[in-house]
Amino acid sequence: MTPIPRMAATIAQRVLVNYRVDPDVARSLLPDGIRPQIVDDSSVAGVCLIHLTGFRPAWFTPAIGHRSRNAAHRIAVEWDGANGPQTGVYIPRRHSSSRLARLAGGRVFPGTHAPARVDFRTTANDLEVRVEADDLRVHLAAHRGPGTSFRSSLFETLEESSTFFRKDAVGWSPTRSGALEGLRLETDAWSVEPIDVTALSSTFFDALPRGTAEFDHALLMHDVPTQWSSVPTLPTTS
Image (cartoon, rainbow, N blue to C red; front, side, top):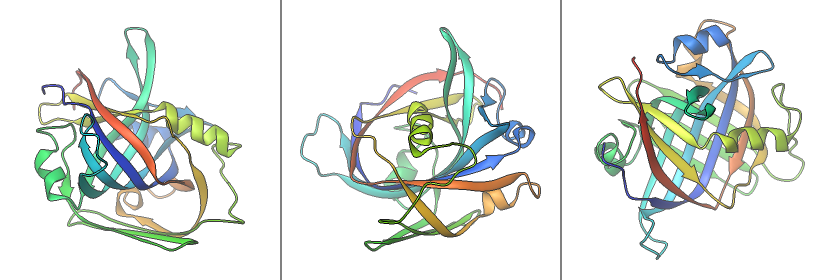
């Protein structure tokens, strides 16, 4: 794929829903050439639920552009680069409510998107996201705001969790040829807050062998300006 121009957008809302996953199960979901990152004897996976506004070429300075709501199931991974081990995420499944994202994904920019209805509903203290697709469903309900505390068995503090996910700025998506194409997220305004999840389901994780995937914690980002750029293809086999 020809490198895409640098793109910009604002993350109106982004929820990172994180699971502990059995490392052997995680490995079975990955192509050759990459391996799961291990934290406290578990791999880390999850689903990114994101509402973007103002998606446009970065050189187009007015903060207007396309809106989209997307869901990406992802696994924290590492691979051997020219300068040693590198880290990022592998994204086996992408869904979008945006027709433009579905048409352009895998052609104009990395990542093939399947169609889905993605709904965000928010109040000052509550958040609900639903993803409805022919092959996948996700439902999240959560409380945010004062009194919300960080709880995780993977990370001791919110800062530790934030650092872990911020470093994995490169997301790899499979191509039809079996290679991986990558997209790098960049922001100078990275900020996350904990949310208390009150209801959660994902048919992707629910379909894994019983007891091999357990919800750990969720983080919320909002009103964050970002840019995306392509990275060289990582050759691999499916």
